Image (cartoon, rainbow, N blue to C red; front, top):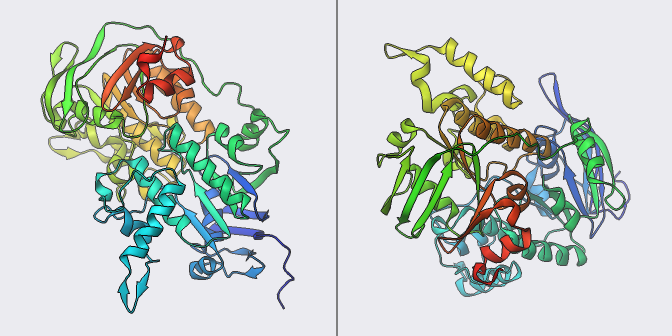
Length: 503
């Protein structure tokens, strides 16, 4: 006999999941009311993804029950969860790059008439949802392959909003978005909540959580460490629940001294972006690059490292022009961490050990033979330093949480011992404790005399961490200043092309 409807949009009781003898989630409870916006918080590996997968039906639980709109949902049945109104936008993108925006948004929910696709009706719906997200400038016929990572994320969110939903999960939806896009997303989410939609919001940005959410639930080591209303709960209290210890400094400062010029970029232009970029990064310096989505920040780093062709300009390292090939530039002393770890940052099917050492295998070979034991020792040292949670160095990267995958990408840069690091959104999808560790590693790199170029859409981390910040708009560098001369408001204005209006 089914239990009477409690009035909750979502009710989970005693959920548990184990792999072999290892419990990754245990006795997790959640009640979500209509219109409630709940922040689901925790470090990478805390059990958030497993919890959400069970709720969505993607994973079968070993213990517990799930009810959506009063309807009992068998775990391991995503079709039942979807029929009940459960929708999720995952952190890792799942778009079809060879299809249009319109086709991606409508995928699985196309309008038809007499067995034929109703293109006119479908396009009308797509235009409506893009306008709700504040992006009616995106043409529905545009190919997904031409979009930036941030724009692809917006298409994923649009697809989730197309269908009728009672519970919507947003898993790190702003990790690739700039300030204006984040504001529009939050406005849309709040309107949906006001209309009765229940939202579970997963984010490592506590400032965003406070802007959007009214309550929180923290997972630690697979268990609920705490939950309640955000009002009256401090940031330090939440962080302590997440990591199990006081975190005194979220932005650790490692003393470092600016030295001579290391990476010199002169009048660098790509086929579309960048456009005439000139920058100098010094040894012992952290140079931040701010800008909105589509400003050309990623394209600039890709042109510097040789991933994308440049049509003019020169890139030099320690006064020596770099060869045109990416192999030559990596050997010369550049290392890059891509913002898109799934598509190009990591070899997902390969092990942690292979990914961490892939760009410097010569260090672990003799007479053309790979010395596996030496490679494994080096990988384990990197894993310990970055606190990568895994079953061991031979575990496939695809099996790791998003944050731990990011640590593996950074481990490869550490292993390379490069003179200059190019970091494109290195803290994307990373928990608070790990962010602090990454910030410390960046500071240590500068203290060791490396030049670090750090792209981020999160203005606060640029202001806290960097020595200088360059702002890009429309493919060009519009202003460069010492970090202490910027404010978040000025960075936003400059990113919008308003640098000439700044006093």
